[in-house]
Length: 183
Image (cartoon, rainbow, N blue to C red):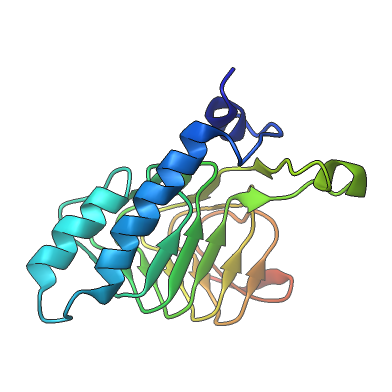
């Protein structure tokens, strides 16, 4: 099993693997270009962000700066919007449905580290998938942690830290996030 396959399976893997380093260097070059493009060049930005992400809907918009680990593990649906300063750590799959909006400085992490110090110091990492359903709105500075699934029509309040999964039609907020309203 390759290190990439291990990462996508939620197993410990080495981020120093040649294939992973090559993917990471590729995306760093691409988002470096993307983040330095003139804002009035939306057509070029759109082409480049679609090269960065693994799969996308036709109508998407991502405001620079944007950062990710590999890009290829991120899929976003139709009518996706991410505001300034979005970071998606995609060592595992990050799947975002259609009609989703991310406010400024949203962070979505599929990457994590072992809890046991002995494993951390070996330099291995792991990742758990993150899934966000359709019609979700993630508020500014919210953080979505590894392994979280959010259902459809979820609103995440600004500054929330989402440590566990939630079903459809809820507003969640706080640290750790909890349901504050049913929709």
